[in-house]
Every structure is written in C-alpha cells, then in structure tokens.
Image 1 (cartoon, helix red, strand yellow):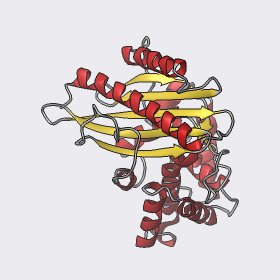
Image 2 (cartoon, rainbow, N blue to C red; image 1 turned 90 degrees about the vertical axis):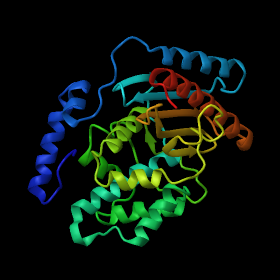
Image 3 (tube, rainbow, N blue to C red; image 1 turned 180 degrees about the vertical axis):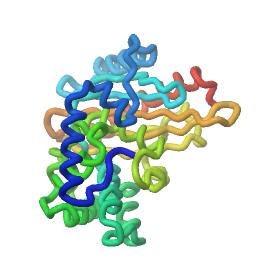
Length: 311
C-alpha cells in the first residue's frame, strides 16, 4: 500500500519527509519504491509504430485536426511491459476521467477517518452514479464530502489526499474545480501516465477498496474501448471511464481478455484527444474522435491477440 494513514500532526510530518525523500529520487527509482510499474526503456515497440501510422492516417483524413493533441498509453500486464508511450507525461484535461480518482480519494479519506466516515449504501449509490452514469452532481457531492473531512478547502483537498497517499501515482494530476452540472470542466488535469499508474495499482490491489472501484468501473455502460469495435468479442470485459467535453475525447481502462486456454491477459488502454478551443460542432466532433479511439483500440486488440493467442 502506498503511504500510511495520517493519525496526527507528527505523522503528517513523516509524510512530508517521505515526500521530500521521494522527490530526490529519479523517476524510475521512485516507481520501484512505490511499487509502480517502470516504463519500458526498450526500443519503440511494433505496436507503437502501428499506432503512430494509424494516427497519422487519421490526421490526413481530417479526423484529427492540426489544433488537436493526443496522448496514448498501453501497458501489457502479462509481459509487464509498456508497449505504447506517446505524450504520456503531458497533463491533459481530465474531464470525467478524473472520477475514479475522486472515488479513490474518498476511500483514502474513509481509511483515515475510521468510524467517522462510512461507505454507506447512499454513498455507494452516489459513487455508482458518478462513475457508471457519469453524473456531475454526484461527483461534486463526493468531492464536497471529501473536502469536509480534509479541511474544507474545496476541490484541492481531493488532490491533496491523493498525493499524500500516492505521490508516485498522481504525478501530473491537478484537481482545482468541481464538476458543473453542464459538464464544462476544463481545468482539472491528469496525464496518460497517471491513469496508467493508477490502473496498474487498481489491478494489483495496491489501493484501498480497489476491488470496489473495479466493480463500479466494470458495470455495463457505454464505452469507446470495446463497444462498436467489431474485432473485440463481447466476452471481453472492460473496467473504464470515459471523458467528453467540447475540447476533449478520452478513454482510460483495463481490458480483461482471455487466451484460448481461458487464462486472463489484461492490458490497459489510455487514449486522449484534446482540442485547443471548444468545437462549435460537438456531436460531429465527439463522434469522429470516439471512432478514432475505437480504431486504435481495435488495432491494440489485434496486436494482443497475436501476442497472447487471445480467444
């Protein structure tokens, strides 16, 4: 488990000392210390080369414009290798992809508070609405609850909780605003690498209540990783969160596929397309970018099928 609980002011000082110590380490060394997966330092993988070619084709076709930037990250749990790392450390608008982070901040806070804060049926229903239904009012409700137990400083309390417990995971995460009902949230940030580190920790039960967060992220809903991707069978399970605004289209999740012997062959998929200004044609824009994510996801699945003899 990353970090210990803050029981009193003295232990808070220990946390600060630990954070300074980690900050003095190199990125790879810090990853090892915190149990996070080290990015592959090998030459560009065949998958990354294929992905780059596909994205270039999408740009030529006008499906990704010149004012749009992308980030991509693929991690294979079976080989323990980062297969794709493109603009991975660049902070991007988080949109609704920040919502599993908020769930995690709640469980960290509950862990600290003991009997003062419980995971009641009401809180569980709110969390399910936040992640499964992407409810913005439910998100703000949970953020305010977390802030209430962490000094009532507002949205930054959520970020503080995450970085207090797992600074090696949430390195480019910045949470500075509540999510308005209209969904126009542009200032909260996270990187593809943050999502990748978080999903790795979630899969390996390195976070409190990881099984519950996975359960909620795995509830059936709309996604751009497997839904509408013809070459991905319906038996594949996905634990994910989408993000959509007039400036961003993104997906982050774990794909749980199985090989022909029934063995799990999970991998992560993170894809983010961010526009420099709000589009005036939201429906067309988000549809085309969603289809780009699906095309890349299909490419990744084909690669994994060949590597691991997926069913």
